[in-house]
Length: 261
Image (cartoon, rainbow, N blue to C red; front, side, top):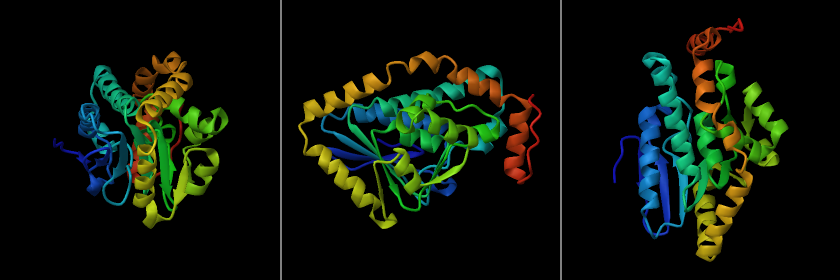
């Protein structure tokens, strides 16, 4: 099984889902979303797989949306909705995998990268890892069904803080917030993720799987109440003048003057 932007490594009970665009810090484009979706389907077909470690190749876990692609493609409202819904489907597929999932975060996890990490069952952060959810600073609403995931992990007040203010967070602060299960020295990230995966394997398979299903069903019971606003929301905000100005400023390094338009 081969894809253009992701790899599935390992064999047996523990597999590695690797984001593989290291030259752009694993920035998320349409192809990567489609490949994550396909890889999740392939993982579901592996009867012997009980745990998946998600990680990024190169210097970062994932630097978020590939803004060059979104700016260059433009397109109609329908095109925007299709892009947003592809992101939803990829994040949902990751969150609904039968095997237990562990995100091993190093470098940066920005925007969509944070969304991928939050969709996993557990998160381990390297000490130097930085996380930020930057959509609002780009004039966009957070989508990919990730506002509920943020609230589930850090609570409503801190979720508003992280999303509204688009600040960058260090690993120790996010451990305090409940985003991470563990923070480890940079050189020990792979070992820590492997140790947690092996801990999963030492548990009986059926009640472990039932626990994952039950906890997810409980915390996500009301998530769909806001999903109808997800793709339309980011599509609408992405077509505002403010969003266009923010994206121009991102590439030029200039300041943004919000016009509320």
